Image 1 (tube, rainbow, N blue to C red):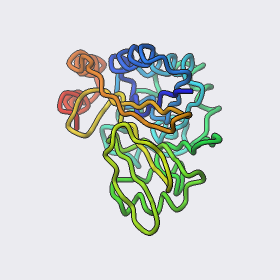
Image 2: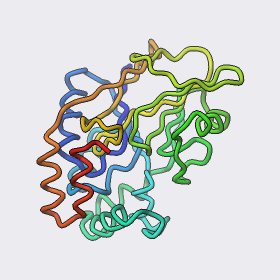
Image 3: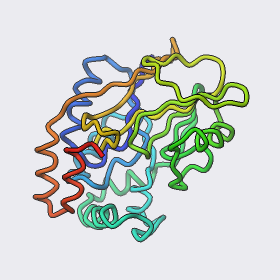
Image 4: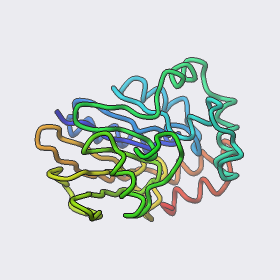
Length: 240
């Protein structure tokens, strides 16, 4: 079975449509979404509608936790806070009810899925270094964990006392413990504006990272048209 692993769509329907096209082209059997479907972008309902229809596993990200009232907007930067106030005013009732049924983590036979960190799912903590990854790898509940939140593709392996950052693509999951981030569909921050996602093959235990082009200029224009902060439009173009 081949599974699409997506995260951090952030209400960017233009990026999501291109990812959807590529997932269909690759013939994946399922899609798992690691959260932060909403926030920042101008199309939260459209993206949630797609996720509801196409994803067999969906997690809550920190932006959904704010929308549902588990966290206050004041914990976020001003741009995220403004976008979530805007989002809450526009979400359809059925999408709010859908979010209420979700969790901050999910366990399958092969892996653990979280939005932020297996060390404390739902905490909004970031894994940005080998040191961060070390403590997360020790705490994760499966030998393989997929995470999002950073908007930067990354893979870490714990083998013995050392953590290595792994750059192989495709990456074959073998001995040791692994943390893999598929990057962000809707707001990449690795200076590459292309949408990012991955496909995990459960039989070969291999993960392949994909980047796809989309019209980020149109997505940025829609953010401005919606009255959202200009910075949120600019960062799509820059990939930061």
